[in-house]
Structure formats: C-alpha cells, structure tokens
Length: 134
View 1: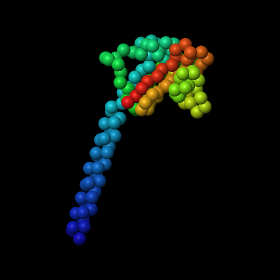
View 2: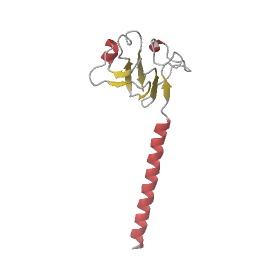
View 3: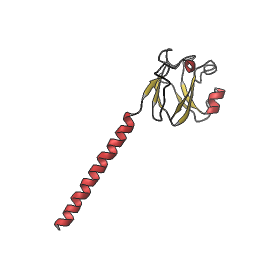
C-alpha cells in the first residue's frame, strides 16, 4: 500500500512541475510581444502616416502578437483591418474588422497586415499602413 501512495505523490509532483513549466513558457511568449504606436511623431493615425513611421534603430522587425496602437480623434478616422485587395483598392470588404475608439490596440498576425481608414478619401490620401510580422 505504501508503494501505491508514493506513486500518487510522484504523479502529483510531476503534474505540478509540468504546470509550472507551461505557465513559465506562456509568460515568456507574452513578455516578448512589443507595442508600437502608429505615427507617434506624425500626430498619430493621420494623413501620410504610411510614409512617416516613427524612426527606430534600424528598421523595426515586427513579430506576430506584437500590438499596433492607433491613436486618433474618434469621429475623424477609424481603422479597418483589410485584405491585400482592400488595401490596394482602399475598400473594407464584407466582414472587415473596423475599429473606431481613437485608441485602438490591434494584435499583428504572422505575415502581411493591412490597415486603412474607411472615411471617404482618407485611405486614398495616405491614411493606410501595411506591416509584415514574422
């Protein structure tokens, strides 16, 4: 009977070690994500933002799960996550995610990420951005 009890204690200890390891691993992944404020030197999410990304040492390397923070006056702009065609044509297709708080935090996905303002002519005049995340 003592042997059986020892086996249960060992199994519980192994489960605890595994749980601590998994929590630690997820914490490492969360800690590695970075926030970037879009156009923080150009007045936020505004006209011409695609040409004026804030300078970083070298070119910023974006990673999946990094967050872009879009700051703007609510009611004057919005942010839509769009497809490549939506970006190229300045249109948000059906089902596009549209944000309008003026302080939108949007997590990047791996690959190309496309964003536009859907207000009339805003995208055409430069309120759009494309970011590649690795």
